[in-house]
Image 1 (tube, rainbow, N blue to C red):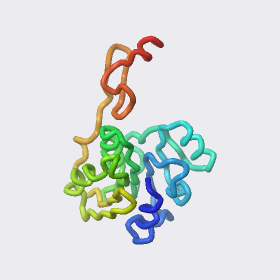
Image 2: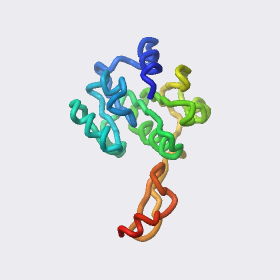
Image 3: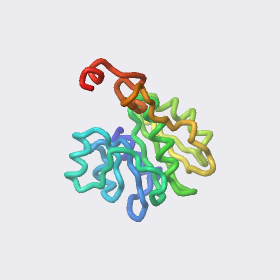
Image 4: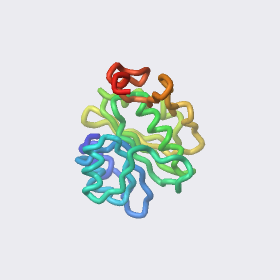
Length: 182
């Protein structure tokens, strides 16, 4: 996530001020401006060092996107990872947690494939807007009635006793190290 893009989006009003807005932030690291500015947000961070740093900052942090059924969020901000399947899964799961008029914001670098996510999602969002800056893109739109279900990844059972998820190392099967440890 580029702080240059984030600061520009905040100053242009593309990202609402965090006060009074129930916010879910997925994938942002502890050094990002989101961690600094959105102190009441629920953060999702699967990477342990960033998870620990966010906890030390006093942020509410989860290792994975919460299951449906939690109170709806007004705003979901996703900092996409390089793994396309994981990015799509995060977007789909976060969109499912938004209220009917919830705002979805996605940010990423061009080298991480943000433009392909923009092409896929702009037709599914109500009133989509985009900001390109610092070799990346930040886009937003209301969830509206668009469907994101087809983007969600389901866990893959690689073999008996082995399960894997989208965007992780060796997502398509058992790697030799895991087999040896088992």
